[in-house]
Image 1: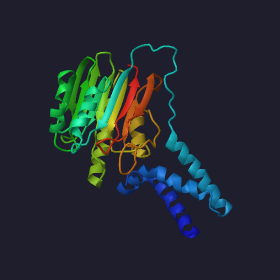
Image 2: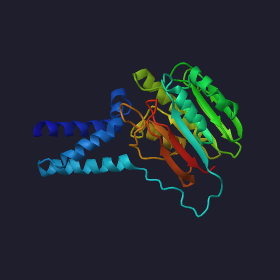
Image 3: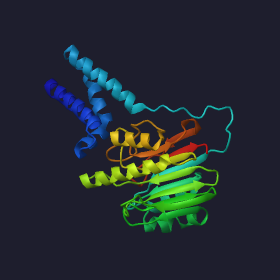
Image 4: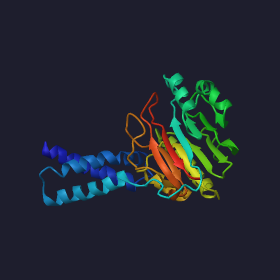
Amino acid sequence: MKKYLLSLGWLSLTAMLLGQLSSGFWIFEQLSHFTPFYTLVLLGLCFIKQNKIQRCIFASVSICGCYFCFTPWLPSYAGDALTAAPVRILSYNVLYKNKDIARESSWIYNSKHDVIFLTEASTVWGRMLQPLATTTQNCAHYKDSPFGIALYSRLPLKSCEVLYTPDNRKYPYIRAELQNGLIIYGLHPPPPLTTDLLHKRNKQLQALATSIRQEKNNVVVLGDMNISAFSPVFQEFIQAADVHLTSPRARPTWLPGLLSIDHALVRQTNKIVAVGSYSWQGSDHRAIWISYLP
């Protein structure tokens, strides 16, 4: 048994390294998303009797993995008084085949968030959320597939558009600008289920990173991005877009893989008032939220 466990440890270590160093290959990039599981394996092996060199390797990598999983640590806004009213933003992949749509649409309508961004917004979701649409400014592209998208704002908007990146008419995103100047991007790139979809997701992220970086005002980027914060592709995206993570990389937001693929990214971390997530409901994703100063 000890022999098999040690083999599992070396496999976990190899997968972790390949995931970080070989993002250009489909299967290797997929390996990066499971970093929390590799870390748990390596951490457990530290308590199994083995030679000092192996224990030192497993312990060192597991410590680094734990740090990687539980960062960034972003405290709540620590100012004596808020300089402006924070914008409360909800992001939720509602699942276009959600069987609990009546209850969840009522929950979304009654939520206290100022801006609500939804992915997998089907035509049925559009009908069920009509009461919300009549009381907000909004823009949407409802579609009976995983790529419907919608944004509702209880705050005044300067603009709200459903857009596409160049050479792409299938995977929309939303760019909205609030009257207070805050710009919100809502994203839902395709899942990397095949090599072709991986390239389309990466190409969309690259194009959006350029657009986001060029924004002069404060920016929030959110949505089900179908990529974890452990991926080197995602790390390149946030650097290119000049935005920052707002929650620990290992926060699970998707079942059944317990992966963190729903994100809220911001331009200025010192304007974060609070962040959080709700429990799983009728969707296979958790709704996440952020309270942010414009």
